[in-house]
Every structure is written in C-alpha cells, then in structure tokens.
Length: 439
Ligand code: GTR
Image 1 (cartoon, helix red, strand yellow):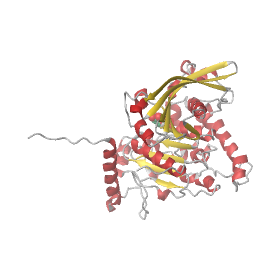
Image 2 (cartoon, protein in one colour):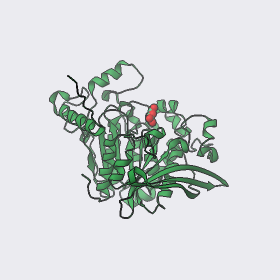
Image 3 (cartoon, protein in one colour):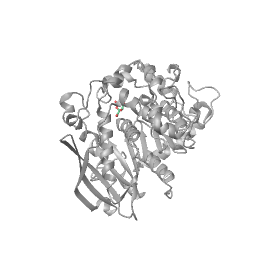
Image 4 (cartoon, rainbow, N blue to C red):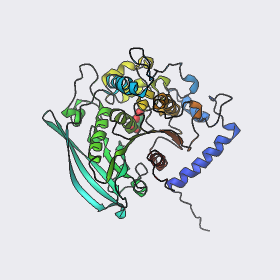
C-alpha cells in the first residue's frame, strides 16, 4: 500500500503549533519552574525543560528568571535636572530630546544628517508578482560635505490600489534570497505576495549595502561610514546600527516621493540586528509611522539590566562595530547605563510599536522584550493611550496582545521573522490606520 504524505504549509504549521501551544498552556502541569505559584493567565513563561537544557551547557549566560539580578530601571519621565515630566509637551520638548541624546552618546552614536538626497528609478516592472504589483529598483544617493554615497532599494506597490497606500519597509539583514524582490526565491522572511494582497506596499534594502556587517577599518571603509566616519573623539561616532538606521531613513525619503505610497504611513520592520535597527530608526526619525521589532533582543527591545541571554559584554565582544565605543563602558556594568531599552521603545511614542518575540529565543530574552514594552507605556500614557503595564499580561504563544498603540506577540518556534509575524504587523497596521480588516 502506498503511503501518502501530508505536506503542511507554513501557515498550517503555525496554526497547529499555535493550537498545541494553547492547549499545553491551558494545562495545569504547564507551569514553568520559575513561574510564581499564583500566576495569572495569560502569562507566558519559558519551557522549564528547555531552560534546564541551556543550563547544562554551563555557559556564562543566564536563562533562568531566578538569575535575574535585582535592578532598577531609569524612569523614562525623570529629567536630568530631577524634574518629572507630566505632559506630552514636556516630554517632546525636554525629556524626549534628552533621552535621544543619551542613546546617541552611550549606545548607538551620532549619525550624520540626510544630506541632499536624490533618487533614480533604475527599473520599473508593472507586471511583478503575476501582475499584482509594480516593482521599482531605486538608486538612492546622499550628497554632503562634497561627497556622495549611493545604495539601492526595491519597492513593490499593489496594482489594485485606488490611491496611495501605507507601506512596510523591511531592513533585510539576511542574504538576498530571504527577501528577493525578483521573487525567484520565496521566503517567509518577506512574504511580499501576502503584503501586496493585503493592499500594502512594501520596500526592502539590504543592510550590507549601507554598511558591511563586518568589523575593522577596511570593512568600514566600504560602507557609508567610510564616506562620513563622524567624529569619534568622544567615543560616540555612529556605528553599524546607526548606519543601517540612516539607510532606512533614506529609503523613507524616497517612499515619501513615490506616488503610489502614503509616505505618512510607512512602518519600519526588522529582525534581530535589523530589529534593533528598526527601533533606532523609528526613535530618531519621527516620520516613520510605526516600528516593528522582531526578535531584536540585546540592544533592541530587551532590557539590558535583566542580563538574560546575550549580555552587553557579549554583544560588544562579538559585534564591537554595531554600537558606539562608549557602549563598551557598560560591559558587566549594565546598572550604570543612563538608559535602558524601554526608553528606546518609548521614543517611538505616540506612534504605534509592535514587538515580536520567539518562543524559544532565550538568547533575546522574550520576557525582557515584553517588560520593556510595558515600561514604555508611561510615555504612551502622556498621550492618553493605554498600553500594557503589567508583565503578568504577557500573552501565550501565538496570541497577539494589542493595547492602544502597542502590540506584542510571541511566535511559535525560534529566532526568525515569519509569515505569522507579518500577519501581526499587518493586522496591527489595519487597526491603527483604520483600514478594513482583511479576513
Ligand atoms: C546574534 C546576536 C544577536 C542578534 C543576531 C542576529 O548572533 O547575538 O544580538 O542580533 O545575531 O542579528 O541574527
């Protein structure tokens, strides 16, 4: 007898995993070793068996909630002069610029201005995605101080649209095949067909086209920082994440001129190192109408002071060129950081922010990412927007939580950007931009 195999597509797999996760979650035996006895649901905790396995490896990194040291987060509303912000005006005029400057000085460095930005549409194909989209390849050039830097981005806009549509800009930190504008390769990392079918435009550029993802002066010289290195005499010149965020803003410069795109509704989305970049881009450039942080972890959405998974010292050792030199002062001294990452999320306020964690991405500290989102809520509160404030509200795997302008979910499985995440970002976009929900 012939055996028939059942092939499950990504979505079906996701749904099955989700159902499994929900049923496991509801089971009384599912309580994690680290979870308090009287926990309220939903309140996600890592799988105790997985944590025990990680412990066995005896690395210097912590994965256990009981290993989180006592810490005190900086108050996002407390100004350097000791006064406390109570209005949105005080936030915008005083504490927001102050917070931005602290991140520039201590974490990501200072980026140069946009310069004179010009665009050249190198190719236009109105028959892309089986005629569902128009695809453009755009060369973007910034000129300043008598020098220029160019890189390319791709833009897909839905042919069925009546008028300008919002767009999702993906910062692609992976090979071309993960976000292939020609669609010869298709990967859930950038489900362009689904994005277009939902009536959104989408754009993509590769991080390495703006700044190589490698250390050393010879590498740096190949990217935009080779042209404008910045002044590093105080350890706060821009670094790679700053350069990538600058690149995202230049793509936004173009998107604001594209007749098919609503330039006032452009979301910036990135995964992992790209997720750190998406938050930093949206923090600095308030023209971004939304930020999507996917598994951004250390230096992204997760709180440094929790020291879970990847530490500041580890990221500064493995990727010393991502952050400015001053950040290295905080290796094993997280409590001395004048900011923590909840304040990075807060810099996106009052614009919508959606944070995604992965079920088994212990390295990125999902609980630290959700906690940062809840601790950013005081700033959203200044705008009358009620976000999640209690970490015990952390939802179960596969269950999006949206409050006000803040959204969050944990996708099943590991460190990745998946169609499930894109659905979360787009559902959130539909909601905050008042678009009709797509079935
Ligand atoms: C890891 C790094 C993370 C994350 C990731 C990625 O090696 O430790 O912070 O950024 O790379 O970008 O894929």
